[in-house]
Image (cartoon, rainbow, N blue to C red; front, side, top):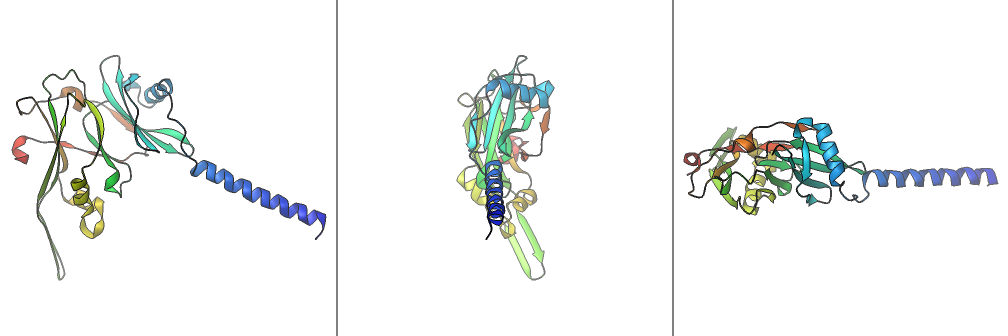
Length: 240
């Protein structure tokens, strides 16, 4: 083999190796630290100017590639921003100025990754307890000779608002098990067919319902990196 051919082969090997390293660096390298507060605020306000973010309350890691940063504004808005490590950088996935609880489906096909995310003004004096529910209604289907019946299920989780005015909560194990038990193992199907699904009720210290105008009115923007599901506010009569 001539020296010229050897040089060509060596160059091709180096080019292939360099390309492989670049691909690994771009798609598979470990995430860097989250952006600092100033950068987060700049990006939040750039994506949703009406958020008028002023302070990041905390950065909460969901896993090493997903994070939540609740924030406040000068005018007393309590909002939520979601961050995703994508293509070797932290990207702002969503911003919302209504801090009511929502489900972030980090991996939509894996209920174990679902998180309940909220950020409510701690000055809401009437609020004492956040009551979260997952409700699966009775379901019956017939397809040819196949009959399927699922009984109704209601699961509940209480969270002290005074201790947790904002938070990122993993679904309880029994909730995850029910969602995963959807037809043909499809977690998306069981949630959609089992309407109303995820619910919540804000209660005062006497166990009575209270209304939170500050948490349910607002605006939001999604970049397509985050999938969220609404948690319906219901009445006590609907779950008792």
